[in-house]
Image (cartoon, rainbow, N blue to C red; front, side, top):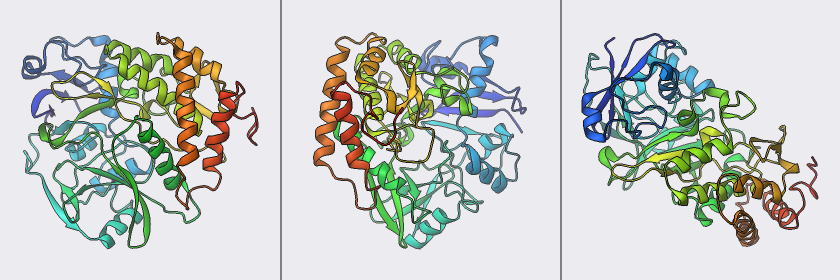
Length: 416
């Protein structure tokens, strides 16, 4: 296997050198430095395009690329389909790296058929349902002959392209436009709960991509428009990185308690370094929403930074905003709010103190204003019938408690 070529917005920005998953490194190219500037962080906050890469930051460079891979069963099935070991990071990137989160494309120039010519193939509802139901055979919707798509995360999902009058399967690196998450358990309401959380985020101005429930051969499916895709951007992609990548955290370190590399404060520092005060304010509102709806899983891989072509960096739209305080779990936030992990114990004062610590002025006005907006939205926006029966009342109760100066869980069955 040759060094893997790394492209960004159609520019060769560097190469992945070495095949050992614990010893490979990224080497920036002269072309990349000339196109985007010496020291540019357009690829990643953790991977500047340096003339001589800092040896002490090799783990962060390696981590950026490793974090493009999914976790759990999705990674297992991808490895099985490609005939590779799950630990073979370079092999998996070489095989599937033509369509990943963001705008990066990774490929082996010595592989037969490279450079690829992307294409799409129409698929019917029954074919989409089969891919959704059989993730072992079609991991992320990939097929053996031409599947080149990667997407991180644990949840079962596939990626497709929305055509004018049909769904299309991407081949050889065609940029997928939508993520589809199936309801595999008839008793589960999670995709309907996520639709509700996503709708609130969109109405709050924290997202602008479409999210809806559709059915394929009778299978209820959450269809999420990809915010990192745009026909006006080079290759139809907008580059992004999640905060695990930006902060050098790997795998389960996306949870603050498991590694200590991530926190709301550290994410805020990344946004502040981008010089975008609007993104910092949106992140504060996003954090208020997470507490208000009981999204316990807003970890570092569910918060991302966009690196648009010829535009400033900015916070990515909200995604995976799932109300889950009613589920059987530890009822702790993935990222502590003012040092408090227990969701039911968080107060508006905690939100204010946390937000104020990021250097945001009038933190109390921001928090109270966001809570009032969320309460009003939840009052008028009903979830779909298949959502958990108490999801709307939970959001109303949580916001009312916070606005009254009490802890989130003061009047709910989930007491701190």
